[in-house]
Length: 76
Image (cartoon, rainbow, N blue to C red):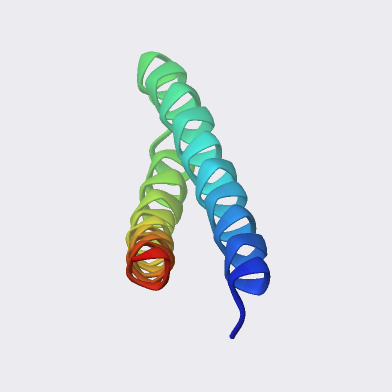
């Protein structure tokens, strides 16, 4: 994989991670407002989605770290 391709993949992975984190923040805000209205079913659904998004974000962060490591190693 050439350096340009790796940089493109890194930017793409960072964008995906930012998007996932933004979705998590939005869901946390929604969860906070639901707790005030005591909507239990929707509350559980949001918690499940947050759990899944947390796993996705963790995986995406590892991919970003891998690309950053490979780029650093390639530039040395």
